[in-house]
Image (tube, rainbow, N blue to C red):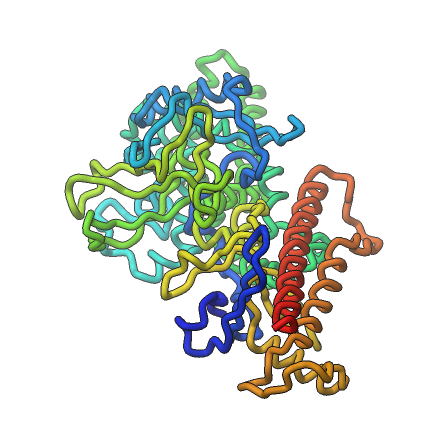
Length: 562
């Protein structure tokens, strides 16, 4: 379904443009023609917008940042990474905990030591220091061989999420293999000449990633059916169903490739070398055999498909929540190459903020893109974050993650957090002709049909259903305007009927879901994390439906007053 539009003059099938009386916040409602099927679920195993750091969070009103709360250890690591990755500036970024108004809670965010002006560089990091989807390790069958060129990859492989996500995940896995093997690169890796500073920087970055179990618990694709049902969101369930099978296929293919990379080649001579080393250490024959058996047991464990698949899931979780898509364009907007998916250390610690709230607190204050001097050449290109407005000292840097972060259920599916969007803001002023996803959307069921509504617009089909129900119930007030329109009239009585249904649905969302007997351990930290996120999504939907109902009632009152 295309996002619901705000202004009827721009769209042929929009029937009415309505506005309620002036209040402390915009209560305008538009009457638009949209499909009753709702937004299509995402089918990706990874997203094309950027991710946030340790347990992602959208800063809310009342969020305060203080240099007194600097995470000294992490900030020192961030400064180290800037030097090792050749990122600039090297001394103006620090990681700080955001504290709520009561001084509790907190997620890490990237903040500034010194203020910067609009257009100035917040962060610039070479593309060569990033993980790129066009440079997977040699052992990956979906990747390149030594003679491959970028154009050898098909459009399907380039744009299919399971393909480019697998390539990035393979790079993460290859990095971890190199860590386990010490400073020497993996014997099948095509990056054995990788810079020592880059390796050290990636080691620091890897150590600062979220705990794997916590990250897994935050992503609905890993939730069980019982936890997923507590969200009371059909769109989320459809998205997870679609993503689950795409993820399973990607994990199986990636695990098989990884197993092939780990398995020693026959005749490699590794056993002889091990024996020689053992004899040189003065080991007896019995000790040598026990050592060999121990090594073989360790190898068998490493090659266990269950363990390999878990490692692949972990790598794909990192890619899903931290990768971004950048366009290869000239300054005049001409695209000279296909989009590039990258995972950029340091940059991936920047949190999400909406770009539709202007300069409001918690809104995006920076933007990013590739900048390079030579067209069609990314060797010297850099990923650059620039200030979209003046950013003060101690203020957190925020970027908009794009349409994959809206509405709330899609953001939860993609990144594992529920954004706290302002339901009172007018979300349509900056909408382009093609339309962008509405931030504040909630599900509303009426007469067995599912609709997606936002506080400022009413789906045409929802009005039709409500009008038909009113005629069936003979509940239209005699004083209402009975003039017919295409598909039925949007009268004050119809508005009140929809508002009543929306209010009932809103309160249903905040009632505690019934918990049936199950084998789930609801006291485990992972299930608590998942259940908490499901509850946050219900609360988000609750607020949207209440705002929607209030606007409908205001419209009804204003129409009757006239």
